Image (cartoon, rainbow, N blue to C red; front, side, top):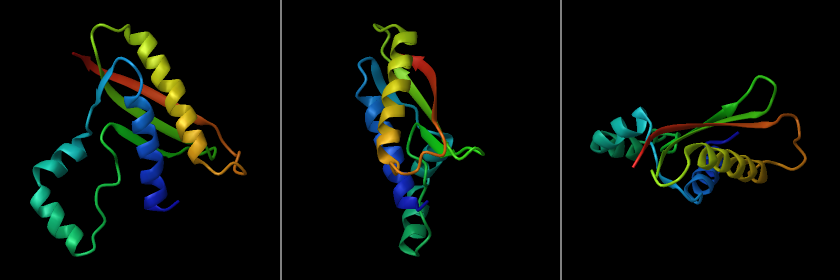
Length: 121
């Protein structure tokens, strides 16, 4: 899978998660925070042709040994929503969005979504 295709899947997962009522934001990964802090170095590296950070903020995905996909979503929720309901909704919507991005002829593995709520606002 190309880096562009991976970014497309991550973007679809992020959009689906952020569209769920009760989701305030996605928790950036440590790598994303460090990249932002060192943005000058990152910009220079990208200018020289080095690929950028492949992980979208709050979303990590990759292949499972069985040929499916494992998607991890780290999100911050609003305190006025039930955490379990929002997390369930995020899991279902992200699974549907990622499945829609995949090749319909490739049914080798399932899409598994793990939702981690880092805190509430």
